[in-house]
Structures are given as structure tokens and as C-alpha cells.
Length: 512
Image (spheres, rainbow, N blue to C red):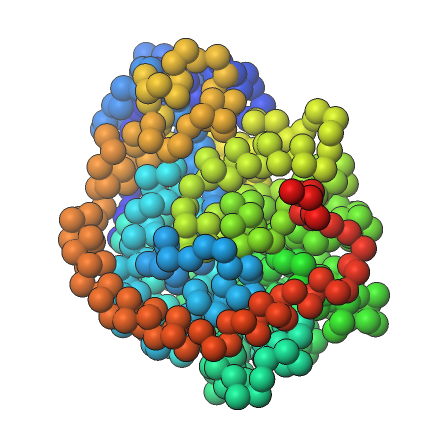
């Protein structure tokens, strides 16, 4: 377990301040005492009292010091499937990538994949990750393996079990009508694999079992999406969230088919999944809606009025044919924004630099007039915005005295920053993550001089290599099993286009 009681002085770095000069950040020192930033200012060494004499001094001359990124939407369960898929729309991709399609995974695989995800986080400057994890069949020992792995490597974690209680066969538009009955078992086995136990009981028991168990762990709730959850189930989760101030993460309007599902299955709410959630008490600052692509203007206004968070997952939205969310409309309505990387089997990379760049450029798709978000805005969404989704914005997401010492040191001598014209713009439009040199979480260096300090990366690569033969065999069986049903799934996907949902989130649809 990573802990720290050290006093560390980081000297002469450019300290990034969201509210300061984001082009040429001021050179200053940062004093870290234990897990928090105690002081920020110039030449702190000459001003420190004897009791605050640092145990260690880090020279940050020629470096940029950033708040650690908060990846507000991610699923660690399919990181070992990165690079396996392309050209699959969202609902069809589910059949190939998600855990219900696969046999139960070994404990060795669960540990290896979790640590691999965490290493990628650190190397890309992510100090907090929201892991919306699916474990089937459910086993609390598997949860412990995941959380112990995050704790061992030192990553701050917002953890939620992803759960649902309805069958995909009945809730993904046109699956039941289009797919022959001989394949219904394939769909049920791959898309559902429902637990024998009530999923609410599982979630509630895990919350009470795990709360307060680890210093960098925040627990949350994660109903998978409104169309896959019953009213009774969501009402129970809403009550649990309200009683214990638990954050709630869910997917909303991830695809056009999801918008069709709202129109088909929620007529009493005018086909609006946002109004459906509002009726259940599942809007507001504790609630975060990942994706939110196929959303109506009036629904955007509702999210702004209620302070409900939207988490943009732009790379995965493009790769799985989901479309482009109305970024400018969210901003104009005051919707709080955060950024996420989504599945490694979908977007393939836990890289917030990719997400920030897409965030800063994609508003031009629907808004011809120049305007927000700026690069500095995108950086704010990738830090403060993600922290806000779990009510952690007083602790992480910025470099402030009294806040947690979660920070990233970037080498400004790399080509991305020569010459240094604007730290914010060069971070967002040029940097890939290669310039990240060191990472501190909770006052402890977990990566320094590009070396992970908390685990053995060579041993981790060997552990991944050891579990991949079995996973590749299982993937081959999944592809073989899906081969027969695949054309029918595409027909259901095409049929969703027969329903007018009143808006378009694609670029130049119908053109060449």
C-alpha cells in the first residue's frame, strides 16, 4: 500500500493554475507535507521553518507541473482486448468486447489487467480513474483483487460495479424482431448473463463491505444505462445514493439506437431518457451521464438546470459510430463537463491528451462560429470536471494549498513544448503523453524519471503474456459464436434508422 509522511519540496517549476496565466505559468515552488500541498510560492526553501525541512528536494527547472488528470469514465475489464476491434457500431461491439460474452476470468488475469490499466494511467498523467467495472459471474474476491491492485500501484480510484436488471434482447431496439429465435440464446448469454442474485443486493452489500477500506478509494453506483434498468431497480439505487451521498455514473444516449430505445420504451416520458431519470430522482450534481450524444436541446437545458454532469468520451464515440455530442450546447446551458477514455476495447487508449484535443476541436462540427471550448477549458474538464463528478473538487483537480498532492511533472525540453508559446494549447493540441516525466499521488512519487516505482513492470508484462493465450482462445470462440448472428445484428442496427429521433449527430450524413 502506498502511503506518505514525507516532506517534499518541488523547486522552480512552472506551476499550472487554471485561473492564472495558462500560456506562461508562473515559476514557483510546491511544498508537499504528507498527502497534501501545504504551500505554493517562490523560493520556499528560504522561508521554511526547521519543522518543515524537506526530506527530499525535486528540481523542476524547465518542467511544467500540472494537476493530475481525472479519467471520469473507464472500464478496466477489457483492456487486454485493445487493438482487437474496429468498424463495429456500439451495440454490436458489445457482443465482442464485454465480459458477459466470455467465460469467467482467472484471478491472475484480473490482477494483471487492472495493473496494466493503472500503469497506462500513470504514464499518461492520470492520477484518478473512475472504473465502472463489470464482473460476471460476480465474486467479491474479484473486486478485492481489483481494488488491491489499484492500492498497490497507488492510483486514486472511483469504483463502481456496473449493473442492470433487464434483458438486452428486449431492450436493444429490434433485436428480438430481427434476430431469429435460434440465436436468442447467443444474445442472452453474451449480452446479459444475469446474476442469480438481485443486483441491488450485490451493490448494496459491496458498498457496506468496502466503505472506508482504502485511503484513495471513493465508492459509487453504476446502473449501466436507463434502458437496461427497471424503474424499481433505479428507485432503490437513487435512494441508496441519496442516503449515503454516493456518486452515480451511467451511460446515456451513447448511440442512435439508444435514442430509439428511449422513444420506444419510455413513451410516458415523451421518449426522453433524461425526463425518465429526473422522475426517479437521478439527476443533479451527484449524477454523471457518460456520452450523452443523441440528446435533445430541451434535455440539455434540463441537465444544465439540475447541475447534472456530462462525461464526454469522444474517441470511443467516433470509433464505435456513436456520433458527436453537442459540446457547445452543453456549455451554453451550463452543463458541467468532464472527460473519459471509455473502454480500451473501444477507444483503445487511456490517454486524456487525445480526449482533450477532440474536445477542443469537435465543437466546430455543429457550431461554425469560433468559440469555446478552449484548450484551457479542455484541461479544466480533464481535471476539475472529473473531480466534480465524485464531489472531490475540493481535494483534487487543481494545484492549491490544502489540496491533495496529486500532480504531474512534464518535461518542457521535448519537441512538443519548444518554443513554449502556450502551455495549455501545446498540452492539448500537440502533446501525446510522451513528455510526462514524473507523477505524484497523495504526496508519494509513484513514477519518477519515467520509471514506475510501485510495481515491477517487467513482471507485469510477463503476467499479461501468461494469460493472453487463454483469452485469445476465448476471443476466437466469441467471434465464431457471433458469426451467425452478426448479419442480423447489423439489420437491427439499420432498422434503428427507420425511426426519426428528431436530430442528427453525424457529420454530413448522406454525403460522400
